[in-house]
Every structure is written in C-alpha cells, then in structure tokens.
Image 1: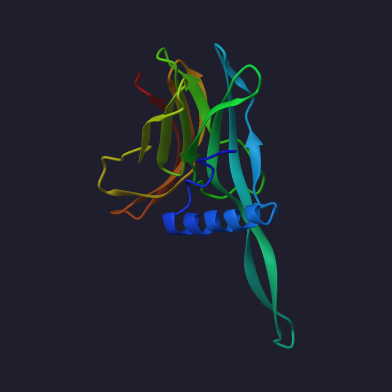
Image 2 (image 1 turned 45 degrees about the vertical axis):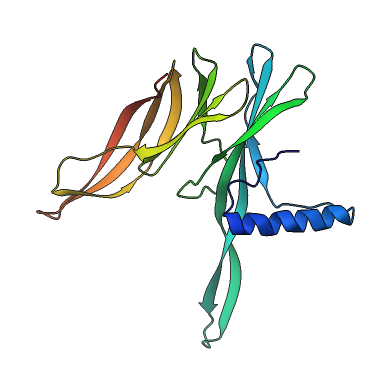
Length: 212
C-alpha cells in the first residue's frame, strides 16, 4: 500500500476519494484508477532499491464540426497525456517496502507519446535528488534515502531575461542528467522585441545544479 499516492490531489477531493476507497474496501470491492506509469530502471544504493514511476492519464476534448447542411456533430478527440505525480518507493533486499513518497508533476505541452521527464542523482549525504523541466520552470525535490522523508521541494524559473524590451512568447525544455549534482536543460524560446515587434526563435542550453 502506498500511503502517499493521493497526496497530489486537492485536500477536499482527496477526502472524497479516500471515502470512496473505504466504502469499496468495506464491500470487498477493488478500487480502480485510470492511471498508467512510466517506470525508471531500479536504482540501488547500499541495501536500498529505489523504484520511481511517473503517473499519467489520457485527456480528451470535445470537438464540434458541421456538415454541408450545417448540422453539428460533436466528437471526442484525444488531447494528450496529463502527468500528475511520480511515486518514489524504497525497497529492501526482499522487495519489501521501506518507505514511499511523492513528487507532484505538471508538464506542458501534454505529450501524445508517454516519456520519462524526471532525472535523478544521489549526493554524498545519501539524498535522492529529482529534477524535471517544463516550459520555463525547473522543478526539484530531494528525499532522505533512509527514511524517505522530503528534504526540499522547489520550483524556480529556468531563464530570467534582463532585457525589458524582450518578451518570451513560449519556451520548450528538455532535461538530462550530466554529472554529480548537475543537469543540462535545453530547448527553444520564441522572443518578441517589444520595440521593433521583431520575433526570433533561439536555442538555449543551461546548466542546473542542485546544492548538496
């Protein structure tokens, strides 16, 4: 059982879901969630085995079209996968759970093909660092490998532009682990000059470090 699996939900909605689970359990019925996960390779550190899974679910939009006679027709169209959270689970050598914790996620644009967004590293203090980038933000969370407790949970801007005459219209970002506690984040930015109204697309690469 993962005690923290629903912690990403708003508190009121979480209570409703927990109430539904309790009711189903009392009736000896299974509770089903429409989630799928992208699972990372197991990370081993001493006698602890760490399993990380990024959970997502399909989203849909309704589209209205009109035929030649003007008759409307509504249809449901797939709109990508919404990532909700990642579960981090510490296991012992027998596969028994030692601890579990959660890393909230929100990625944009929503992918149409599932992929891994999170990169990880372990520092000299036996802390697990997790990082992912989306648009112009970096999201990080660190856990104690012994207890599974969260040490830090931060979100900050990827790139801050000093030029007040520029406006960033959109940003794409991809992240990769580099070395030690350092990561590379790269992608494109669409920038508009507020004076000349000129637009340009630039490619950027930046180093992101998580302090020990």
